[in-house]
Length: 345
Image 1: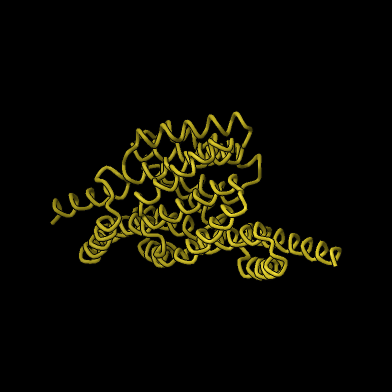
Image 2: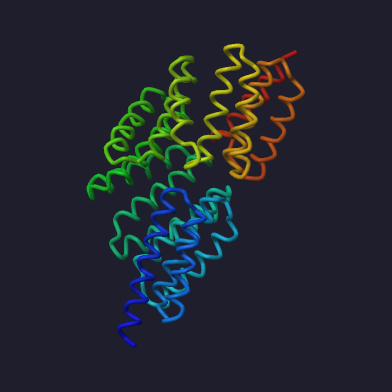
């Protein structure tokens, strides 16, 4: 009987790892099928840690598909089980994922609370990788709130930790984040420097998802600098890479490419990109707000003032709901449009 139990638990471990592989490839349906099968075995033999691991993984799948209520439910249930078995190392990771869910919903106070709890726990148990990830999460919240100095401080701390521990992929993510906050401040030379460092790292470790984001961010910088052809080239590569593996990024960068096409006089192509892009970002409040700002600019370039005003109003509604600061990317984008519309005919 014991041998059969060992064999069954080994089978559950294999199913769980298969689920992780499918999740990493964005094959969420197959991932869930494997997770459910693994969970049934773990429950049959009373393996609480195994059950917690599966709930944690299922929560990540829900988060990746923007099913935030389901994600939080899974994370909270996993957290209770990890606490019950005393797996404190994973507790910090779960708290960080809860922070990420709240951040993606624009609930920054709740997100910061969970990131700080994760940071304290990760430091307590010596989990350097998750310590750096928690710092990056805090940096992201501060950046989205317009608190750029605090964001930069946290990103640099994260980079130092990941570099020391040789967590290249995580360092690349933090380098990209640092580039984005410099971009937000209009410091394009510094932004490009950090984006290129991130690109070198992600190419070395084979992170297609991150490579796509960096290409898109570089495209946005070149757009800000008026280098339309370079911007279009980088944005197109980003959209091709992101595809289905990162719909939020693919949608956001379609908005940027739409701006370029509108500036080049191809309004039809711009409108098509906007239609494709908005479907992809609508479930991400912050990204949707920033996308609507781009849409308003495209409408103004196409001399569709009424549509621009509608897009601006929707962006303002999101900014108000998220309580973003005026000097955040969304806040500044909304204010620029208000000024532009007030000064126009």
